[in-house]
Length: 435
Image 1 (cartoon, rainbow, N blue to C red):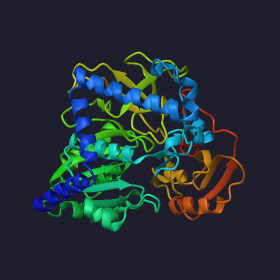
Image 2 (cartoon, helix red, strand yellow; image 1 turned 90 degrees about the vertical axis):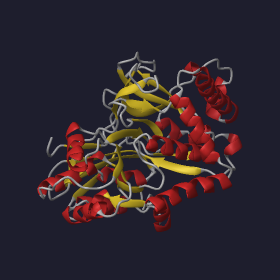
Image 3 (cartoon, one colour; image 1 turned 30 degrees about the vertical axis):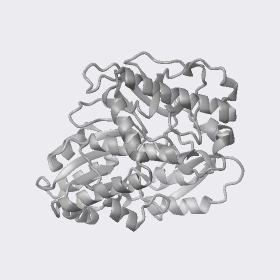
């Protein structure tokens, strides 16, 4: 097993070398910047990444041309998902319009779907970020990775890709007792290093299954456990520790950018910010002005490596607290708290918790905003903000019923706007039935 892991590890880097060693170059850049944060060289590297991106944006993207005489990033406006969706072409760099791009389709935490276009260099940077931050949790290329998420046709990995990358795709839709038993049996098999990446709610469901069978701790060679996309509760952390003997770590990332911050092994509870690939600010909840350290505010991200579609001072819709962290491993500011997607729980018609059903709605990119509401045991409403006529209403209902139950009564409500909360966020889901 160790030999197979080594083969996968070295094969990855040899293939990258054949292609020009671009991921390796990004990896070395990330590692130096983050692990020498307060060095003069690291500061120069970060400043160069930022200045190059800003200059590229004002030269090539029509939205940013009015800011061509900028002196600092503070002169640029805050943008959000709705602005991007309504003026997508204005954010595309003219010198990249005829180049190959990669689509990152997301709904984000505000329920506003849109597509971000990324260039090849950005994809390589994301790959290097994933490798570096994976290593900070104990993961190494070649380890067997159980990837637990909502796997639909749009995001599922090809069988050959999964085999080469040693990935086991686990669909949270099917985390019932029978499949949980099969999953645990597979985890126990073999002596290979095993890693886990998934939703906190999925880890919770697996641990609840182990509770139900009065399981003993699982004997497996676990190297890494990382959760993301949802809040990781103390009870889930404790349950995972009980059964798997591992301190599960939390990652804060999004589809449109990549890994923004993450807890690291033996690094305490704070989130280490990815200063190598992003310039991150925390803004006031109501005004577009920076927050002081230690205050809850909006996460504003400038992506330093997406030249196809520059995103400068992008409001992610998430909240966090940034602190000057004297105890951090590398002396850089960290997040002491991250508030990602905060959703009310939705139940299916039989009373089972459905933590991921709302994610399915993000695969309708024509939605400007959406919200799923449960009004009764079998009664659901979908609020949709859309331009023109939505021709896939029955397709959407069929998709939701496959999760909620065939006896679900689903009403579609067309709205001009899904109301914001005081924080500026919009809830993905509301439960009036079990409120």
